[in-house]
Image 1: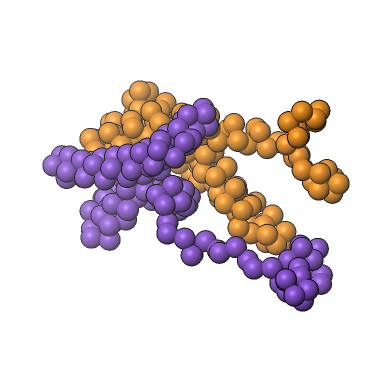
Image 2: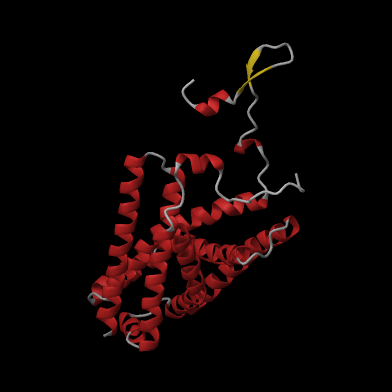
Length: 143
Length: 131
């Protein structure tokens, strides 16, 4: 027994026999409540946006370069792959934006009880959906 | 238990015994992450509106737009806040999932270094256009 925590996992059953204590069910056993899904999604979207900063950097570098370099970057953004990346990036940004505001309210001490965080959780999901559609409808209309 | 006098401590007795704990920099990290988050709320909104406004724009129009101090200043603020917020967040993600010290420390260095470089590349590009 190398780890001290292992010592606490051994106990005697009602017959006096040494047994390992049962483990509590792990993460994947539970039905995912909205709070759990949004918590990990906030992280995932944050990391994805980190990768997305490469696209922002590329666009700014292209804008600071000659016309043909910029045109090539603009062409890529308008291609199927470019649009897919932009779409993913915009949804991640909008979600992280609303979810982040929810986090800031928690940090200020509001919205910790279950009804509140379920309501605000779904509000984040709905706001993300509505704003993503809105941004793309307006964006493509302007294009 | 409620009647007995006791002292409430956030640090566990085990943590105290091990002599490990906050290096007194934790609250600054937390605060900087919140501060950049608050700054990014208006800056992100501004950026989204700008990108929509500029979708399909020619190079000349983008240069024209970026040359205004009213674009340049929020753009620089956005870049600084974004990359600062990013490296603080990625540091926490690495600290949470990478437990091997030999892998954790270089990973954090790499993430922070890359964030600084990318931020500088963005800043230089924007200044090159705008100044």
